[in-house]
Image 1: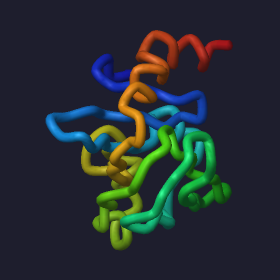
Image 2 (image 1 turned 45 degrees about the vertical axis):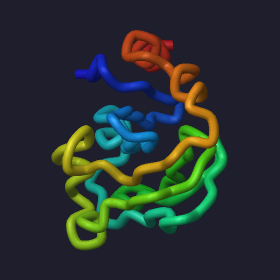
Image 3 (image 1 turned 30 degrees about the vertical axis):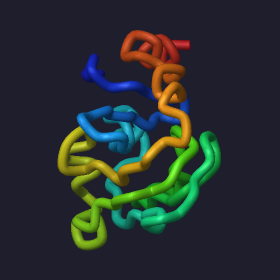
Length: 126
């Protein structure tokens, strides 16, 4: 299930736009399945500048440690503190309670350049 209203990266992050300038970021259901049980999330710092395509955090699972990539260039303005004590939320609800951080993009047009649901699904098949 790939939510149609979100945008995606080839690195398996999703981006949700809302009423504010900020966008919410998490990892896809496919990514959490591949990682297995997530036991620790290293969140980016609030106020940190992040660059599209560059690592900005880490996800540690029972299988491996994987980088979390920034889907956009901008400034982190919120993180999901619930993940400090309940990292498994990324597994149980990747598109809801398992969100990872919010970022204010430097250039809002970067969001439109991301993959739509069909494009992301096609990237999984390819």
